[in-house]
Image 1: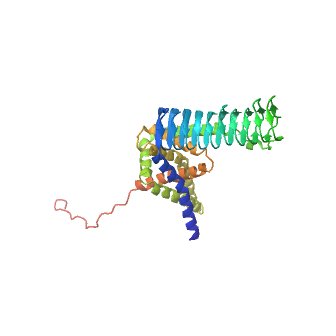
Image 2: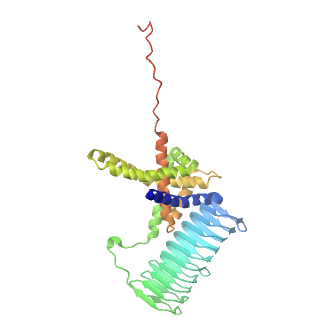
Length: 389
């Protein structure tokens, strides 16, 4: 009994972040379209969710800012956190919280009161930008802005050309301290090559080079950003393909989740626990092994499609008050879930929520489609008429 209570308590904990996110979307506002602009001087008193081809954010956001698109430009006062993903992401203005951004090209020119985590093919902080702590990883990483405390950097090439309040730690084969580099603490770098220090650069503490840990060829680390971008576009392609072929079916599935989200997630939890047990029991006997294989293949397909179902659910949720074209809703859902998957710890909760919601939608639809047996009142057979006799 105690174990059952623990399992139910864990389920409640997993469900909380999902409902918090749902309430946040409903409490905030969503802006979508080809070109989305929040004008200079405009004040938004809540959290903002933005998705579009070209996104431009000005004015004041009195909450968090979630944005996704091809080209993103931010030059606003954001009193909360900024979480963005896109091809070209340019974050300026002032951010009172944290910044987390990923894209092909990520540029930070903002003054950030707390921390910044940046990932991209090219990551750059501009002169005049300021952060407390910085984590940056890219094929090319260039630091021109002020870091008040520590900087953790990674990339094929890393260049530091600004003031660092404490320590620098870098993983790169090409680390350069340019003429404007002034590190108040120490520099520790993992590289096969020696540090390149230009005239005028200064390090107060020790400079230590360490050999990168040797790894097997199959285990060597690569830049994760191309994989993240490829995964996003593959997910988006699959989602659009299914929406084009099965628009009504996806609408029916997500209608069920939108009307009763709690029931859907409970059904998903029961399915995620019960189906694997049923599969294992099926493999116990030779006759049931075939059924086990069929169930296993079907369950794998359901889990793979859960991301599409959950993305469409999320997109329709944020457009609850402003209905949009189904493909716009799907794009918004894929972008939001992709952003959440980039955030440590949150990505685990998101993955579990996607699995529970996706499987819950499918299983609930299967039960709804199962025909109920129909029984007629038992009566004596009709007597033959004289004509039939």
